[in-house]
Amino acid sequence: MSLTADSPSADAAADVIENPLMGERVTFFQRGEDTGGELLEFEVAAEPFAAGPPEHVHERQEEFFEILAGTFTGLVDGEEIELTAGDTYTIPAGTPHRWWNAHDEALVARVEVRPALEMAAFLETVYGLARDGKLTSDGGGNPLQMAVIGQHYWETNHLASPPAAVQKAAFTVLAPVGRLLGYRAYYPEYSPRHRE
Image 1: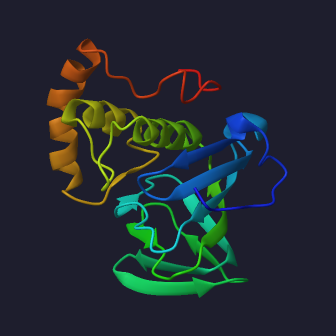
Image 2: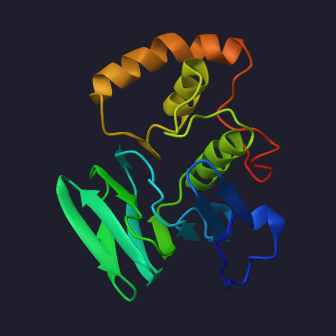
């Protein structure tokens, strides 16, 4: 990946994860276990024209962005926003949103998620699966694997659509089958600090 960042933990391999499919890199500064569960703080860097995550919801978490470089384009509760270096923005818990890099320069943002919940393990799992070629370029993957992840991390992060009831019904059917077949919500090789 061509992104560069100067950060206190950029040289610690366990604290930096990359998603080559989405053109993103995350550098963790503070995790939930470091802050009594109060905060996850990280830097996200996105390559030019990176698509970003699909529209999603953090049921119980507030998400704060501080733009360090480039331009952040987002959709928050149906309204498009654009932020540039020096801008900050807070997305309240329960608000559907997505973001992307619509420009030809790298986007770098510092992110705080409160409370931390299992967001670090979620990111490590999804980025690890992407690195290993187990996800598609739009972030999708094996339906059984995605059901196990979706059910486990529901309060941390879930898709904004289809409706919550439809997603939960699908997970109720598919996740137990996925677990029986060996799919997990997190993997030690991707998320060595996570404990269930």
